[in-house]
Image (cartoon, rainbow, N blue to C red; front, side, top):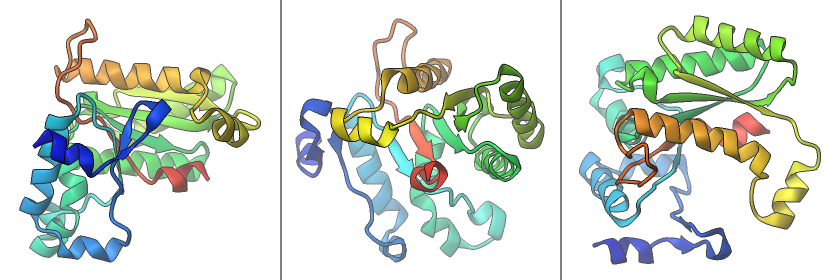
Length: 213
């Protein structure tokens, strides 16, 4: 029931969102079975109009490895991205960051995620339009069919202090990402262009702590 799902979440108060904590240790995933994962995911989708999931980049499944055990271990990530209306991939600039971001996009496509649902967010992107265009071209060339959208988020001085003080990401940084994700959600048909939300699961792939550190 939706009310029971909400009781398991931490209320965000003034931030107007609830938080459901994930697994404390990676090894705990071995105790989860697909049915034990699918039911809570469906419950969250029924309890909330918008669900944002921060998941690991582990996308190997039985289709890649031939191993049912690997597929079950990564089922939480796989079922989330496959059912998400939009998937945001955090990318760092530079050769290594672009290569890893493109590899993650390819893994998403291989897992069954349509290119139109993938949004690449280049964190700490250079401010030069030419440099940004080059990053976008390199990402598209390495990723193949995706991503559909590339969003550039510049470096902002004192960002950690501002988030600690205000409790939220500055509008100048968050608005472009939110707009790109909502556009992807609309393309997926999970919400009408008028902005009235339906039941959807926009996912955040990748380790945000790793990519933004």
